[in-house]
Figure 1 (cartoon, helix red, strand yellow):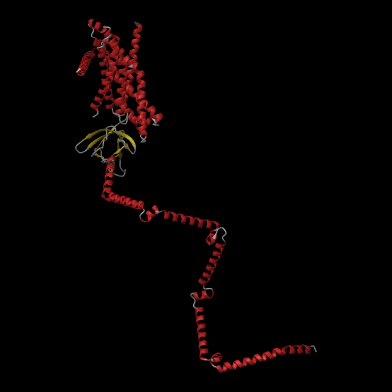
Figure 2: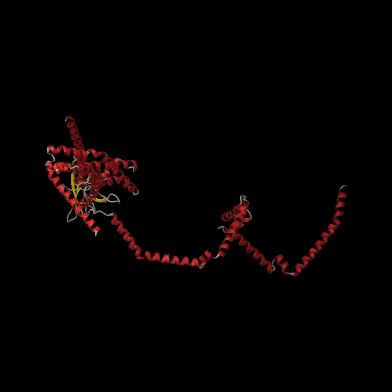
Length: 330
Length: 258
């Protein structure tokens, strides 16, 4: 009997303890899920939105990215939707405050973001009805964007694209049939053979260049002699050019801005012309010599006689010289 | 013709069984006022112990693995979108709303319901129930009411236990296999669960308790043909309980979540 009583008591304690623990857990769950803290002061605010896009009781409220409370209730009214917020701290709202509903992820869910406003703006008096910013639905925005793109495409872009594709098809068909230059390039093997020959020639030229053959090859070769010659020629040209530019030499002086040489040359030419004209007129000895036959004949006779005299002297010179030397010894 | 007759006979039999079950349930509910009487208290306590404490072992395993499977399946899919942190919400919502009461109902139907049916069927075929009636002891008050009371009380309690273990199982998988930290998991777990979800789930569990007790007792009292009848009663209890739990689960969900 006593054992039975102990067994019964043990059963009662076990069942009671289990029930107590589960009920305690249920209580804790209930408190957690009700999102109300027993030890924190809760401040309530009411914000009116035109639409809330699915905000639900229990959604988070953020202030500068920190959770400061939850949505306590959502009440549909004629003017819009009144959302009651249960916050852990009071707000310091200014005139340019902003309360908006934002999507928490692409998969769904919403949260409220509060911006209290600039500190230099006047504070909102207590009891002022708060108005939230109408939220933007990402899906709706995406739908509008797609619709806009579609409208743009259907407004001519698609037709143009179709025309381009049609033209491309036509071009490809012509190429396939071997029509036109491109078609021949694709279909005619002669072009291919020519191209191969050109490539072979180019390769041969390239190999000759590599071997340093020919002028261009030598120019490209590592020897560098032609290059040095060209460089030297270029230096000489540069020097001549410098001389010309600086007015050195006759040509330089002629080119230079100074007119002295030019004037001298001009005067010289004038003098020569004057002498030539004088000679032409028969002025002076040379003129007479050129114009008068008698003077020419006299001069010719005189020269003939002079030559005979010189010949005589040449024939008598050894005797004269020997005699002089012989007689000189005494 | 025989086919129609057979179907009709099965239909009538089902209606009769349902009617008997409802009569037994009605009688047991009326007898609930005696639940705290001295004579019944011990029996109710015994049934609470059998239903609650003795089921904890199997329920622990079932609950933990249910939560772990849920976390793994949803987590692997959510990881493709970089949203594996949301397994907390997925596991908790599913466990609290549906899987907690459902899995508890199945386990209790399979373990406790079948045991009740077997016990009552044995008493019926051995004419112990008839003997009780001869002694002017109401079998519904003496046998059904304590079991109904124990199941109505224990099913929600066990469901809370299942929910807790399921969420913990999900957290273990989230931490070890999906890289979701425990604070992130539990913070996310309570994001979208409401008290309504919790209490609708508990209401469902209580209804499942009523269903299990009614079906088991009705099948037990209806048993015939000795040991074979006991086996049939046990098998039918499990099957009918499962089917009824499934159908009522949908209806209650539909009732509260439109």
